[in-house]
Length: 199
Image (cartoon, rainbow, N blue to C red; front, side):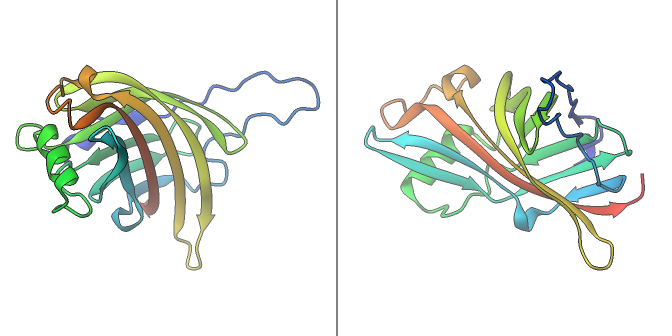
């Protein structure tokens, strides 16, 4: 993950004006100890849901996700997330083999997301950024939800959040197997970071 330090994902919180009496947007990282956080691969995954053979939906879950989050105690933590397209659940399923082949992981060994802006109110919001998939980078938009910011016994801090959105695979240059795999793909991610050191 040498280039994670170069390809950081910057979450910028835009504080939105709200009517009198309404709950103001929450501040990203409130209560989160500053420091460097490593993505917990055992508690993180990316799932791509697509239509298979025009009849049913198939969930392709990627099991190897890694990354870093660095919070300096402000509202704009730096985060980098990378997914290995070769590491999937049920790799011997016909649909899984075809989907992985479509991704051409030997040529494009990583999926990355670089965020530009996160707007959040309460525990829900919208994340916009750039998704690099199959060697193509395009803008993407996700609905996100903050699941928890907590400190475990012993002082270990954790942050967990989820997100979901849709892409068209043809816009990323994946135009093969149109009769087998649908063009629209729903993406959901579930990630958790654990603090590993000071700022």
